[in-house]
Image (cartoon, one colour):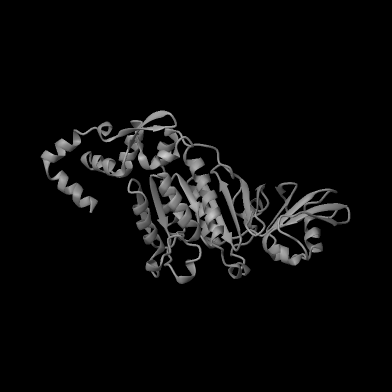
Length: 305
Length: 79
């Protein structure tokens, strides 16, 4: 729809010239925010300006922030974030592997935060047992590919960002291509072999890697920066498959919601240029007791493999 | 020697009365290792992946000292 509009405008030189003469500043307006005047711009105005300049929405939101104009949808990110930090988030490219329980939460939050490009990967389709915890699994989405639905939801949540959808599983053949060019790799997968594969690809391309996992009442988050001497084997030991007893545990809805949110916080810290909270550490959530611990990891297993 | 232990998640089911994250004390012979503690608690070997002693992960052959605080939990893998 937008592409058609863009072509129509491009085919009409008169309207193109007129539109391109419109300044971003003319489409924005000041709001009073915490006692300061701040220029903001709404989605429709920014998208119109983007079309007139033949910019992608992603490029347009970066241009706005460069001009110190905040897309109104990000207004409440301030003063938690600086303008420069918001711009960094808008410029970032993130791979999210897994669009299920963890992925649904992560993807929603990153899209709302303005993460510039979201590359979404999942080879599964939604089934009825996903309803209890997977935010993108609605009654009308049963049997549909998870990544495709996630892509649609991202476009509905935030038209200013780019989304790339891969409805095929990640494997040895495509892992490098999926990871390449990303600023951050997020593990929201549901099996250990794929997690190890993704972690290795992130390491090979020297991209920060955030690991998140859940079962039952429990969940964990860990971050491995490219220079880290540790890896996922320092969490899982010599296990290469998920503990089969975990299937019996299932997953309670709040587990991926909390763990996905903690992983999204970690992503926002890294993307905005701040220090990670969980580098070489393991956050472990025990939802049953309500306790959460952050434990430093050390090289237990990786050096012995 | 006295060791303070915390167990998490599904490991609680192996220890009568244990509540996740709530510390309890256990007596072990001097020179006992992490693996000895796990044996004494009767936790099946396959169920333990991460053990931390005084806030750092340590391998099964790590020798414990009196008053050490040990946490044991099974990492999860679902999504």
